[in-house]
Image (cartoon, rainbow, N blue to C red):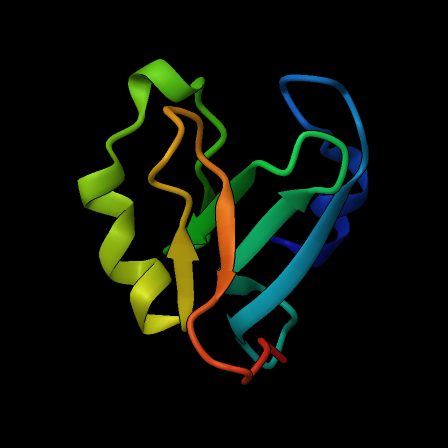
Length: 95
């Protein structure tokens, strides 16, 4: 995913701006892994293999996304059916 594309994306639920945390990118500023978050509704949208996963909650599988979140040091909010981040597993924040 090209870094310039992020400015054109918005939250599919409430149309708010998205904040990005880049986990891995190439020398040409192509994002390989990252996390898009909406500060308004607190949902997250992972970027995996350069593809932002922005489908509605009912079409997403928590079990498929959980390994990446754990690898990135984040916890998923398991109390709700929506895809929200509960917070970092440790005090180490994403860069």
